[in-house]
Length: 300
Image (spheres, one colour):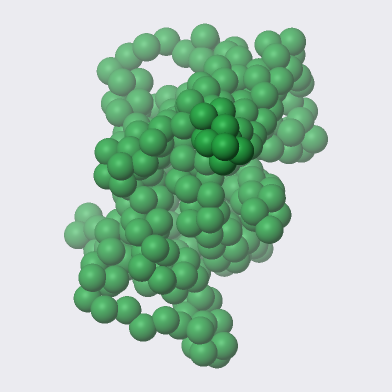
């Protein structure tokens, strides 16, 4: 089941960039994000109510969903999309993939969990691999003030994503399933972002073209309802640090799609990066052997 959820998340979120690209144009980016998560919340609430699976929540649960909505469905998306205007998308992908390391560190700080060496090692290999994959794009970009601001925003978005992972983990430990918490989190997140748009005077325009509506539906159903539910379920089942290695594989799927749809050509450094990313994946998910002393004690 974990493998299925993992592959499902990677395949869905590795292809959402196509839909995001198709949405650029008539509708302002923050408004498109509002539409995406408001509709996703509506779909989740409708399915949960019809199936009588919407779990009741106390005040603490709702406050956690507000925080989760702010981190996962509001601030992080604004940070990444704004950062992408100033720095190459490859650099944003590299920064985002540090979520594996941030999740491990935050789980240690806030939950007291031991940081597994193989997870850190796998995350480091994945980062190095992504660096090679996007090296031409990174090397050809000159540093500037906008670059530093973009990097800071990408890092802030990654930290928000990591915080949302930990909040979901806490909610699941309290017995609340991701379907319920995602429904409320998306509702709160889209509501807060809608308030921001109103304050800033951003118009709520609508593009009724087949391209925009089709891409929006893809982001709503597979990208949000299915993708976030699958990923946050993994967070609860595998732990935030291991589940976050998905963020290293998203760009890999995106590049393969780009090779088919846009003529992207694999180079020797990119292939070396691919090998490192996959090696990191194997390292993150390898089973640890029990300590020798513990085994000896059981045999005694």
